[in-house]
Image (cartoon, rainbow, N blue to C red; front, side, top):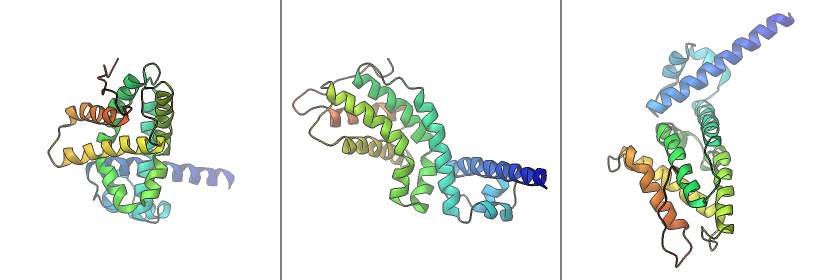
Length: 202
C-alpha cells in the first residue's frame, strides 16, 4: 500500500510539472490559451488538470511562479558588483530578456491575478534591485530624494511598458534594453547631475 501511494504521489508530481511547463509555453505564445490546450500540451486530460488546479487563475499563477523562478536563476548569474551604473545596465539587459520572453504570460497574469499577487511573485527580482539601488545611493550614483521602492517600481514599470510598445509595433526587441537603460538612468540620476552613459555589458 505504501509503495502504491508513493507511485501515485510521483505520478501526481509528474503531472503537475508537465502542466506547469505546458502552461508557461502555451500562455507564453498566447495569453488566451485555453485549459484544454494546456492539458493537451501537458499530455494529460482536463480531468487530471482540474484535479491539480481548480481554476485557470491557479494555472496562470503556477506558470508565472515557474517563469519567475527560472528568471531568478538567470539573474543570479548577473554580476551586480562594481560600478552601480554599469551593474544596473547589466541587470536591465538580462532582466529585459526575461520580461520580453514572458510578456504574453504577463498579459494572462494581469487578467487572472490581482496586482498584489503579481507584485508578490516579483518580490525576488525586486529585492535584488533594491540592494543594487541602495548601494548606488550610498556611493552617490543614484538619487536619494525618492524612496528605493519607488525607484525599483519605476524600473519594472519601464520594462513592462517596453513590452507593450513592442506589442504595439512601436519598438523593436533588440533596441528595448538600450531604451530602458537610458530612461532608468535618467530617472535614477541625482538632481542637478548630468545623466551618465554606461558601457552596459562590461
